[in-house]
Length: 177
Image: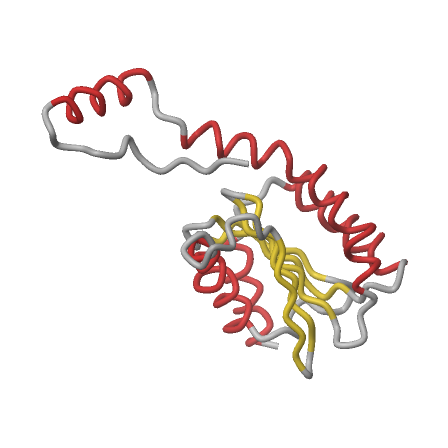
């Protein structure tokens, strides 16, 4: 009982998503599961590994390993930045199958979505139902994050001045797509 309360406090404190977005994501889980997807959790983080929030499948909250979920958000998500180095810059989805479950990582810079499914999950249901719904639900969040990463006019002027002085070769990293 105490362990469950501690996990709930930790999960609540790391969930940066507004209630309306959490509810929409919960609806995506519900619709996917009605199609046989067996979605147990969806985690959202940035490509920098900053956890944004999670939603769980029915009966899965508190049942999933907190350490594993945390690693998906903070370690595995930033690994998406290595895809271009490997010549895989056009990859937007990676599916990994394990004995105890299936992970589907969706790379929509600057957001990384990880869908954790049961081992017998219908991945077709995730792809045909879940992915389009997730794109719709997360579109405004992604747009907001992309806009917040754009430099202001003052930042661009400072970068141009520094570049002209030989101090900066690249004006910065901005997520595209």
